[in-house]
Image 1 (cartoon, rainbow, N blue to C red):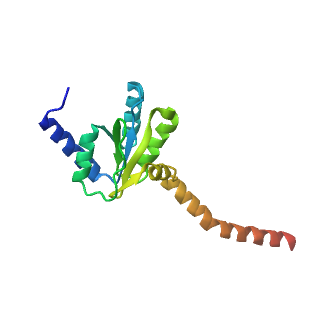
Image 2 (image 1 turned 45 degrees about the vertical axis):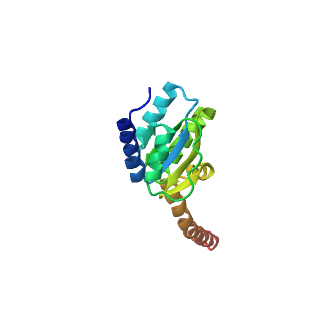
Image 3 (image 1 turned 90 degrees about the vertical axis):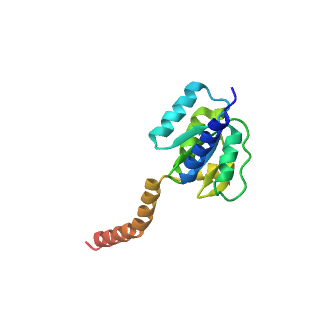
Length: 162
């Protein structure tokens, strides 16, 4: 059943509000999903604080044209949904996790990061960045390694002289 003009305006304004307020968004082609898988994705993303919205491509394109996003919009093919959030990496990472679980049922088509359109390959690369906690741990390890090496060297010298 076709949407009425008022419904289209309401959905479009909701999309503008959600996408405009998000730090990043991921366009997902979900054409081969079952309803159970779709519900699992929705609940999984909601637990992580990520919004997920399904809409017609024409309404998505209209909403994207109203926002001030630079670059070329990726080609939106198939049935498109949007995962959005206030974290730069988490929406892409979460969708990529579901993509690995569901194999060929969903795919990342593109996205938005920091007010700029990103291609599918850029969003997939973004999803492979480790979490903030892992990056901080790696930084701490790099900072600690020279000190630890120095202490181990002093320990070996002390053992030699005894």
